[in-house]
Length: 549
Image (cartoon, rainbow, N blue to C red; front, side, top):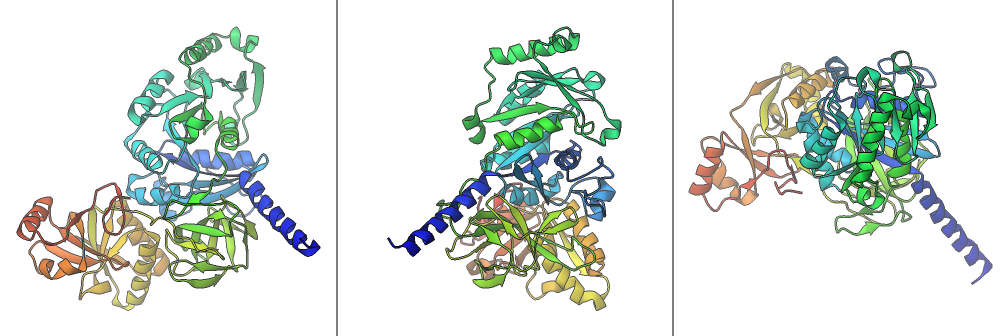
């Protein structure tokens, strides 16, 4: 081998080695919870502990000054006090770079959460100490299980009256069929909550309160046999709890955690910052670095393969000063460089990546390079949809991004016909983002499209955004439809014109049939056995043909 060839080979090996090393520094995870469990507060406290923010929840300020930074950036989110749109945050901690995907807590936005979880390597499940497992928590956990996403459990609000910790562990195990293994165990509860026993490090961590939780809570570590713990009534009680856990072999096993069979458990209070640092350390120490992503044929794409990414979310108008459109993608392999030309898989269109951002609430920073596990936003990436693949050199196709079956339907009409152009642009945008599914009736088209949603709150978001972002006020009218089925083009002549039946077309070209009731579905199925009516499982992920994914 000549000198030039050896140099080129060494350079290639060094390049691949650099990609693998950078990927090992990444941690990409989501936070899931029932509404009001404290997910948004915990998200902001992570940013506080990482040094990105300089003040507490409610008035969080970016380190470099400027406007407030929050995961809930939409006006409707701030008014309602709930998360209804997923957001992406990127921040350094210790020697790692963390990509945090904050998910909607409300059940009406389960579809958005499902898409986000497709881009993560782990999730933090936040539970309210007084409420434990709640319906939305259970559903989100099942989504994680379907995606083989490892779960870290954070039992929040331990500074308030709550349930017995062993009762909470039993509920996690019985309801979720998941073995909870406490890494930290609380010393005291409610107003007497003073610290935790770290079972892995074998130490007692004593917390100190700070005003309004606005700064990092000071910690003082003691040996597990220190008088501060042993001679304390609350400490002695906590030690008995640890002995019980040891007696039943509740020991952390990394392989079982990564397989989704075991969940490390942490106790704390996001509001007072108690336990936040220990939980953040666990993200670095326990959550796996990005593994190879599997394509549509279940073939893993090596981390050091040429660049490829997976679009999992599209969001418009995050900055009111600019009518932007951002396609969020997770880097699956290789090294991304700003300015490189990538191929958009579905259209085979060549796209030059001139404007690339990392996004934190409404704040942005230009990204010059990214590695596997990173989440980046391609600005003004027109034509991109969730599930799309982008790549250079070696083509790839990912599994289709699933959609949830709608159970609510409303007809949308623009109030001012002079705003029809804005209305049409707005509904196309909302459809691409997945805010609502837009169904069009043949011969009516965009004059009176049908909005289909998993939950009614999606309609409020759609109406608010059409008015505020597109200056196209609309009225939403009720319909008689309550059930949807997927069909094919060959069945359309038999279905059109039937009483209590409406054929509609989705933007992807597939056909659905809307019915007034499940009884009417059975009638049509019996009268016309040759037509295709595929069931859309409510609250389950299905592809565009209604098949469960």
